[in-house]
Image 1: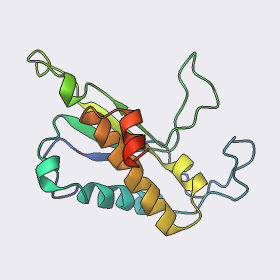
Image 2: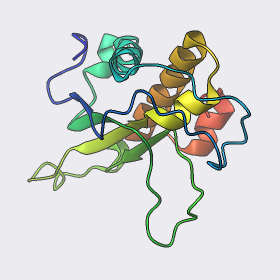
Image 3: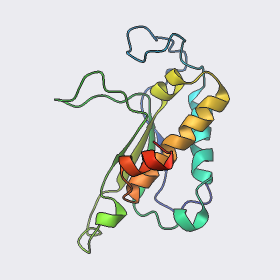
Length: 156
C-alpha cells in the first residue's frame, strides 16, 4: 500500500490470474491490436504509483474506501451487455455523508479494471497514463465530483 495513504485503503487484486490472455476478438473494444502485455504485478504497481501521486493532504481526507483491481467489469442485469468500464466507484461520496453514515457503513469501493485498460493501450507509458487518469477519476467520485465536471477538467 502506498505510504501516503491512510489505513483502510488497500489495493486488493481480485479475479483470476490470466497474464497470457490475448483474446481480443469480438470484445467490442474497436481496437485492431492485442491488449498490451502487462503482468498483474506490473499493473498493480501502476495503480500503486497512481495512488502515490495523490497529494498527502488530499489522501488524508479520504475516508473508508478500499481500492480493488479486477480483470474485467461484468455488466449487471438490465445493463447493456457490451458495457466496458475502466474503473468504477461504488459508495457514498464524502459530500453526501451525514452523521448516520459512520455507524456500521461498509467501505466505499473503487475498482480498476485491468483488461479494458490494457486493450486500449499500446505501450507501458499508455497504461501508466490511463491508470493514473482512471484512479484520479474514481477518487474524484469519492469526493463527490460528477462525470460531467471531470470531463470539463480533462479527467473524463
